[in-house]
Amino acid sequence: MFKLNQSAKHFQQAQQVLVGGVNSPVRAFKSVGGKPLFISHGKGSKIFDVDGNEYIDYVGSYGPLIAGHAHPKVVKALQQSVEKGCTFGATTQNEIALAQLVIEAFPYIDKVRFVNSGTEAILSTLRLVRAFTNKNKIIKFRGCYHGHCDALLVDGGSGIMTLGMSGSAGVPENLVNNTISVSFNDKEGVENAFTKYGKEIAAVAIEPVAGNMGVILPEADFLTFLREITKKHNALLVIDEVMTGFRHGFYGAQQVFNVQPDITCLGKVIGGGLPVGAYGGKKEIMDMVAPLGGVYQAGTLSGNPLAMQAGISTLQMLKQTETYTHLHHITARLKNGLEQLSTHFNVPMQVHQFGSMISVFFTSSKVYNYDTAKTTDTDYFARLFWKLLEHGVYLPPSNFESWFLSSAHSIEDIDKTIAAFEQSFKEIV
Ligand SMILES: *Cc1c(COP(=O)(O)O)cnc(C)c1O
Image (cartoon, rainbow, N blue to C red; front, side, top):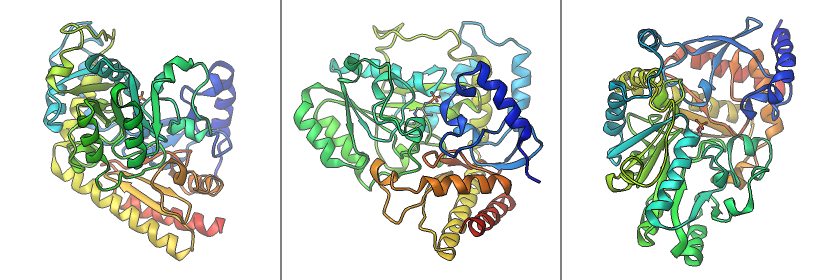
């Protein structure tokens, strides 16, 4: 019998001392109902909850764990690193090594600054683009999530979308006055914004493949269009690859869509499961950051030795091309399997995929922006989510989060997952 008694007990305790029992909103399972799982440990493609249930994991900590849980190489490197001390407040060799790996994979990054999260990377970037251009307005896209910095929470994806919120309380109007929110894939919307505010726009910030409203691909020339229009108006193009970086190959989505940003934001995979973010770009822009320039940005634990080591170990594994061959193979197998089930059970389901990210929308319409994503049947997703848990598959507890495959997922895992979906579809329909 499938039981979650221990998880329920832990959640009860957690709610007394942690806000909502969690430290990040989507973890509370609000959009699928019921109580969240408490995880005891993970190994490879699997996680185990405190009741002893085993699941094939598609959350992957929401992106960082591209090599799976507790990869022996990462664990060993961390053990060696921790013995030498956790933090010094001085630069270490590993910061150079991780920066070199990042720059190798992202040819438009001349110099990089490491921070502790994706959020920090974005908010530092906003300060920098405003300083560099001497302008204040930022264009962002509805349903894209760039962390929880005030200015970009407007129409955010991820938890904001999951909870049906339009932004956040506690953000003064003067902090969002400079945010212009346009639909993803909407060229005309971007053109209109530039016509109206062209002289005031510092930057356009975008997830090159939206991954925080479910996975949504940019239309063919959307990103190159953004490159051209920003150049024309002396605005910068910020590509937020916190999720997409290293997900398709040892490079970013910017390479896949052939677009050259001014600044790239990174996080998730480059920390290998430890807290890391980064922003980097053209030398003349990055040199405006302190200590070289007047844009102040700092961090007690920035470039933390343990975090750098986890990132280096992970990226070194990703440099072996067979890692991506395997990732592409298993992701395609899962996508095909799901599409066949959708036809077989006559469930209207769009399967979207980029690299080793995948998500589904339960709708018969084409999904290309926030509004079409919202047509997905979230009740159906919630029922499917719980059935899949019973059958040993752990998806993100929201229809608007990407699922992440790792190099630790085997073909057998994928086939078991497809069988679990088949069983779940049977039991729901
Ligand atoms: C996760 C994410 C962020 C925020 O990163 P945190 O480390 O959670 O602060 C920013 N941008 C994108 C595209 C993300 O997916």
